Amino acid sequence: MPPAQQPASGSWSPPVDNHVHTQWSWDAPREASMARSCEQAVAAGLPGLAFTDHLDFTTWTDGDQIGALNLDPHRYSRMHLIDLDGYYATLQECRQRYPELRILSGIEIGEAHLWGASAAATVARTAPAGPDRILGSLHAIPCHGRLTAADDLYRLMPPDEVMHSYLAELLRLVEGSDLFQVLAHIDFPRRMWPWSAGPYSEQAFEAEYRAVLRALAAGDRVLEVNTKSPLLSAELVGWWREAGGKAVSFGSDAHQPWRVGDKFKLAVDMVEAAGFRAGRDRFDFWRR
Image 1 (spheres, rainbow, N blue to C red):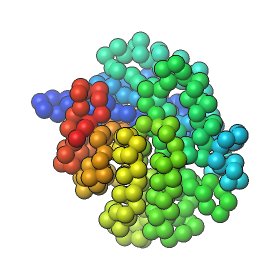
Image 2: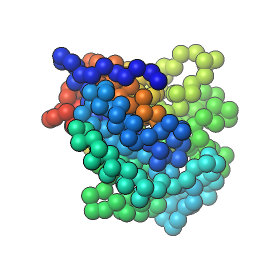
Image 3: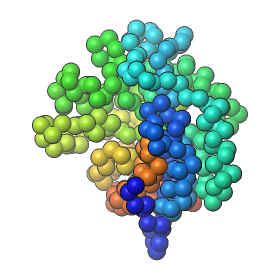
Image 4: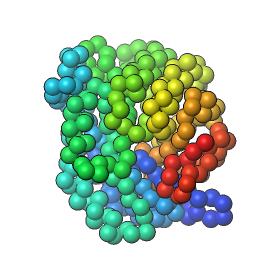
C-alpha cells in the first residue's frame, strides 16, 4: 500500500476531502471500504471527508429527459443503483467509530440533467436533511443514439472533438439541473487524453470552459478541484474567479482507501495561487 500522506504540521492544514467512494459505489474495486477510508483520512490529518457514492441510472421514468431523447442508457454492464439503506447504515457505524472525523453523507449524480426525475426522487428518499454533499458529474454524453461513456468517445471522434462535445454537454448539465451543489471533475475525458494527440491544452478549449464556469457561478455553486484527474491549472481556477465563482471544493475521487486526500498539498498550493483561501473553518469550502 502506498505511504500515507503526512499529518498536518506547521501552516499546512489539509481541507476536507469532499469526493470519496466506498464499497457502495457500483464501480468500487475489491479494496474499497468506508472504514478504511476513514482510517486513511485520520492518518492524513484530514478534518473530515464526504462519502459521495455513485447515483447512476439505467432505466428511465416519466420526466427523465433521457427518455424523451430515446437514448440507450446502458454504457456499463455492471452499473446498478446504490443501496441507500446499506450505505447509511455503514455511514452511521463509521461516525460512531471515528468521532475525531467529520463524516459527511453524499452522492455523485451522473448526468443529472438527463435523469432529473429519477435523481430528484432518490434524493427525496434521504429527507428531511438530505445528503450533506451532492456532486454533479458528466461521465457520458449522447452520441449516435446512446449515452456513450467518455472512455469510448476517443474511438468515435478526434480528441479535440471529444472535448468540445463533452464541454458543450457539460454546459447543458449545469444549466439543466439544480440538484447538485458541486461540479465534479470539469474535464473528465482529459483523464483519457491520448498521447498521440500531443499535450493537453486548457487554452484550446478556453471558450467552452468559461461558458461552463459562468453558468456554474450564476447558480452560486462550487467548482471541484479533482486530484484524480490531471490537476487544473491556477489559470483555469483564475477563470473561475473571473466568472464570479466564489468557492472551491477539494476531492480525491478516491475509489481505494489509500487515495483519500491524495495530492491535496499540491492542489491547495494551486488554489492559493489562484486567489482562494481557507473558508470559515476547516470544514468549509475554500473561498475567494
